[in-house]
Image 1: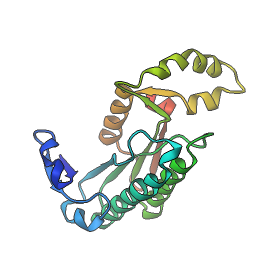
Image 2 (image 1 turned 30 degrees about the vertical axis):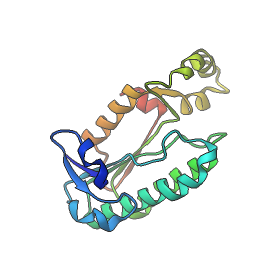
Image 3 (image 1 turned 90 degrees about the vertical axis):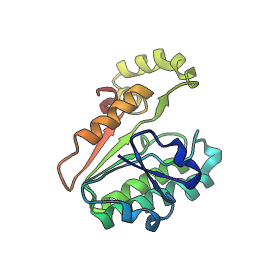
Length: 188
């Protein structure tokens, strides 16, 4: 396994993984480290997204996916896994626009890809949404709100990790883009 890391982060790369020193915003800094047999898992993004971070989405999230897609296309990688976001949604317009632009870049490049579209991932220190689970359950029962409640549902960090593993281990048909929304992420 290869991991793209900044110079100052090489020491944080997991044992057994090979650190590739580069800049996630500059395809030329890591394209040479990719081969056609590689699967790229793109996890670069602004932490704790909120509407107030629209500029960060434009300056970090968008250039990083554009650089990764360019590098993947140049190396003709076998599979690309991208963590996007559920859409459409009522809030986080700038974040959703950037993630949709990332999906569009993958489609234009013609890469075999898996796109995961979670809405909110519950992990350590972020358990307050558990209080919303009864509301989600009720909305999922009602036909008029079922699809939206499922699409914008909560997923756990464990479900997200399992979905990422499944995406890597079971790529879609070559030349296609598979979308895994909240229901598919939960089903892994």
